[in-house]
Image (cartoon, rainbow, N blue to C red):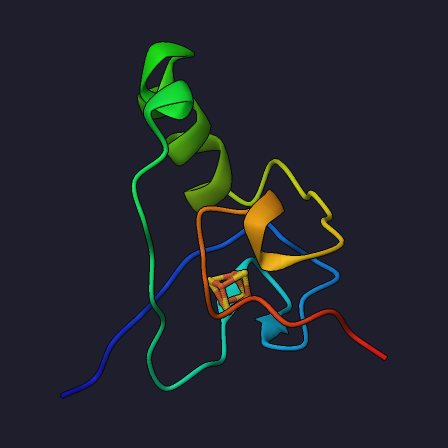
Amino acid sequence: MQQTIRCSVSNCNYYGEGNYCQADAIVVHSDSAGHDNGMEQVTSSVTNNEVQSSANKSSETCCETFRPKY
Ligand code: SF4
């Protein structure tokens, strides 16, 4: 099955240009703080390729599959 994952974490090893994740599968956990801070707006900014972000470890993202780029 073809899948498309949009993600703004540009320093992830799996991050692809245009906010496309290149991983075959990802693991995501809930982030209740995100829902309290306008998550719908964040999601549309990611899919419109308007935002990029960075993180140091997977616990700083909602994605357990995050691996920093070398
Ligand atoms: S953080 Fe997760 S969803 Fe984003 S590019 Fe990395 S593996 Fe993909």
